[in-house]
Amino acid sequence: MEGTAVDTDVIVVGAGPTGLMLAGELRLGGARVIVTEKLTDPAMQSRGLGFTARTMESFDQRGLLPRWGELETMPMGHFGGVQFDYTALQDAHFGARGVLQWRTEEVLETWAGELGADIRRGWEFTGLADGFLDGDAAEITLNTPEGEQRLRASYLVACDGSRSTLRRAAGFDFPGTPATRKMYVADVVGCDLRPRYLGEKLPNGMVMVGPLGDGVDRIIACPHGTPASDRDAIVPFEEVADAWEHLTGEDIHGGSAKWVSSFTDATRQTSEYRRGRVLVAGDAAHIHLPAGGQGLSTGVQDAVNLGWKLASVARGTAPDTLLDSYHAERHPVGKRLLMNTRAQGTVFLGGEQAEPLRRLFTELVQYDEVKRYLAGVVSHLDIRYDLGEDTGDASHPLLGRRMPPRLLVGADGETRITQLLHPGRGVLLDLADDAGLRGAAAGWKGRVDVATVHVKPADGADPLEGTTALLVRPDGYVAWAGTSDDPAAQGLAATLERWFGPAG
Image 1 (tube, rainbow, N blue to C red):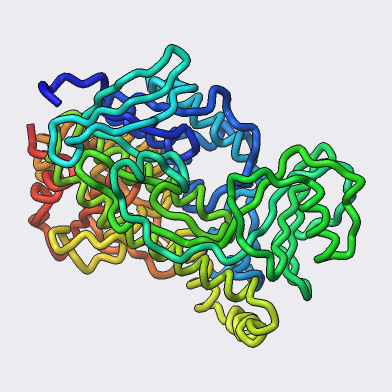
Image 2: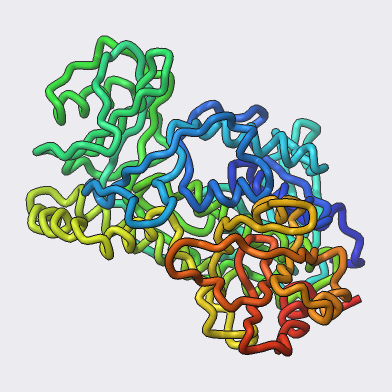
């Protein structure tokens, strides 16, 4: 490829929840973005039925939660079908339930469009030109309603699902374990089924039932011994009804299905999240058994981690090396996701051989420490990024973690960090009214907002005790902490430059 002209800063391939969230994040960061999607109309099928507590926080910090209306959260969760409550984690819950994925996509597409994202439906990715590893731009070809088209961008992001064509074209490795069994999901009508929200283990497998309203039930059937088959093959309702009757003894053949699909326990993750000017996110980066609805949520959080970084690099305010932190932070999260979903599959779907393991888990979840651990794993509230040593007080308990939703009080009244993050910029919390600190951050005006506030005291041990300042990244994670033991605010300028580029 010759020259440097591009059609846009970033092309996102795929308009699912991950791609649409990424498009909005890129626009908040000032990057131009085109989203290409092979489907001409939004899919009204909903594999996902909600999102985790951490993903709710991510939506909240962009002011999106009210768009869903009133959300129902669950105080109860499970790990591999072993139920436990979340009361061991303060103010924690399993996440929002009963939220159809098409509705989540609708909210995110509307938001991204309002911000100026160019969403092109009926545009199917077909090829990637050479030079994406070290060239000055990346070029793709697409089938569109107007015939074949070419687009060029500074960066490409594959958000086109588990069988990502862009991931394959870019040569990403996708190692893991192949599928060993076939399972079913369907939205059925006229079957009059009792709820089985967290699943029910039966002699021949496992089933779940969740009422969706208007007489529609979401069912999941996981029979033992059903060999894996081509995921793209059409699954007739009769096959699902046969599996349901085999498992439960209930005959649902007289009902009907709004849609039917199958899934497997295949577990894979790309070895790298970036190859040159191509990055991967969501199911294009990791696939797993759908245990606890973590897939959609992890993809959205991939997008929130990547969006502000990629926007800064594409706009030229931060160096290209900032993108290396995307793999460094999110690949371990994806690896941990695969670990916990495989463990849950062993516990819940392992048949009689796994019964001793289920009994052991049932005993272990009686301990609050175990509840805290498992709740953190399933809700993603346990994420802590390794930020290295250049972070102020490197021993601060909040470094690498999300800033907790504490009440902040300033000259303009009360607020929370989620409200301060709505514009998608970094936030420096000046908790000691330090003019010198504010002056040190002046060179990043427009990229980092400064808020002089104090924090309402918390009951019990307070991780903010003695803290004089916190630098919160646009994704809500604490990147630097100043304390009363570090009055000179060592490392603040270096940390600002690391995450937001040179001052100016």
